[in-house]
Image (tube, rainbow, N blue to C red; front, side, top):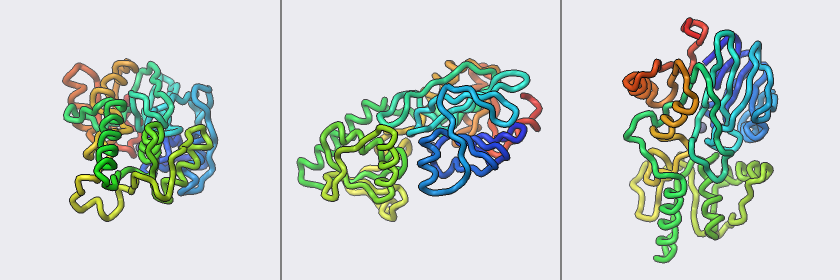
Length: 289
Ligand SMILES: [Zn+2]
């Protein structure tokens, strides 16, 4: 989305990058992001980043702006912009409930809301992170008791570190991939440390992209994802998205990513003024801001 040379997870002269997942990478003269997002992004790409802290007022292009933790992964953030005719909040990828390795999310009041809709239909109802954690630990402990080697398929950045931290808290050692280790080292710089990494670790962590994921999984393999076998997600489920909408109390909602069309239709059914948009949308051209 672009508004007057300011890109929201879109490339533009002044680009805001909400977090360090590659599908949110942007380019621009200056990229505004948190320090953690800058460090994590630099594992994979270059670019001139300007670090911005949560809760501090700054200017991006012509707009006053402020960042609010999004709770999706370390450093992930939403942004509030003060436009001529009202305030706008863009969530980025977001999570209502607190994860162990991400900052606790916060959501401001705003007149316009751009909200992610990755899981924007009610069939996506996830257990709370604590419930999902119990299931994960039970799965791993049962495998180990039976002398099996549990293998978890995870996103290498964000989810892998969340799972590593959960297992650390429960005294279980892990064998992550090299990429997951690189990311974990950056997490450690920001105070999220891991004391359970070992070449002989009890639990093997593999990437979603690993070729084996296409094959049928053995009883001791598990995909950790909102779409997978264990629904420990770093995205808001449908009900978390609804809580965010109620907190922000917007007059107008734009939905983006995933189930954007379906989520906007549901919101309209509930009496909200809601419209799905594409990532490349120029909000000036819509003429409604
Ligand atoms: Zn993401």
